[in-house]
Length: 259
Image 1 (cartoon, rainbow, N blue to C red):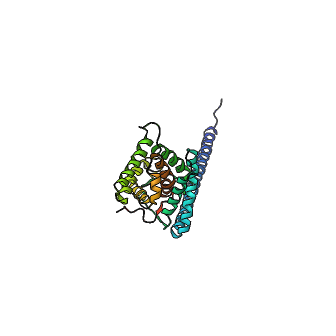
Image 2 (image 1 turned 120 degrees about the vertical axis):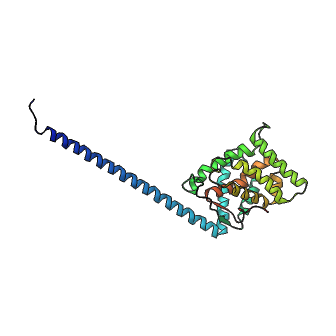
Image 3 (image 1 turned 60 degrees about the vertical axis):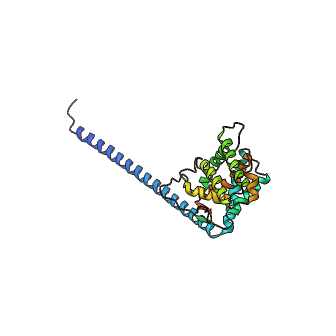
């Protein structure tokens, strides 16, 4: 073959075309990634603003806060029913009323440290992820089983025994609430979705206050037996914890330590 004076130039042109095409493709990918990132950022901002507005509405309107709690109780009751709880029982209905009573004086918005993880985009997605975790966790930790060494048997028995001990000695209600609330908090905090999304001390304060302000008749029915403990935690504590985690709201004054 003879010498081709255009050969070098031809390969240079091809190289330039390849380089230009690669640059265009890279720019397109970069632009697409930027657009996608901006869209996600805008969505997160919009959802955050919507959630903030919704929470502000609950804080400013006690009627809405109570209605929202009732809706949360109903949504969780459906999940607990799947776990075998009798959510149509009088005991469960009394627990639901106690949860609503807890917010009857209003709710407050909570802010924790920015380092706390928040795994869900918005409250609705949070509830979808947390409801199953809470119901499963409550069955695991607060429902007695045939095995005396089962965590649910141990915890529910300890809570019931502690409650009955204070009732027998007519101990102070605040002391009883603190003792029982501490036992409940330890197990609730082990449930996936709660730890990392909720300050433990604040969680404990809210649970203790919920017990301290609960109708004594509800406590006497629920906490007097290990089986009743599961009903109490499921119908009263669980909906309040869900709101604390997903929307960062708590019954007004419940984040303060019981004195």
